[in-house]
Image 1 (spheres, rainbow, N blue to C red):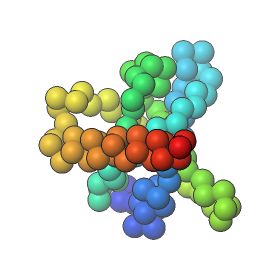
Image 2: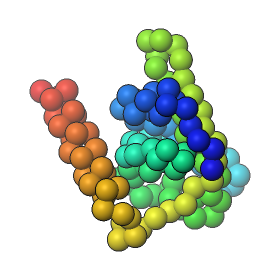
Image 3: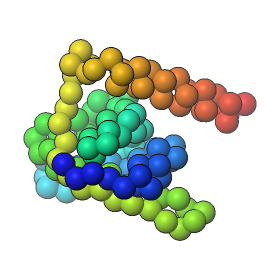
Image 4: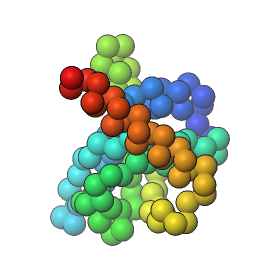
Length: 116
């Protein structure tokens, strides 16, 4: 695992969502928006996947993944490539579950306030 620079970690955490790219059954790219829950110092990234559909199925077949985020105002972004591992909720450590719950609550609150 490659250690990510603090600047990259902060950048991904400052975005409302991350673009996740996987490979579909026909070998074509599939793109989905996900939220980042946590980034460990060793480079492990935990994603929030509320709708386990095509992305999950693609990763079960082929774990190749790319994560991208862009700040359109600063015209700046990053793309990270690697291998994904699907972790069941009951296998997650408590601090990851807590971070997931906090992100989920923040995301719902953000959407509610924005749509008022």
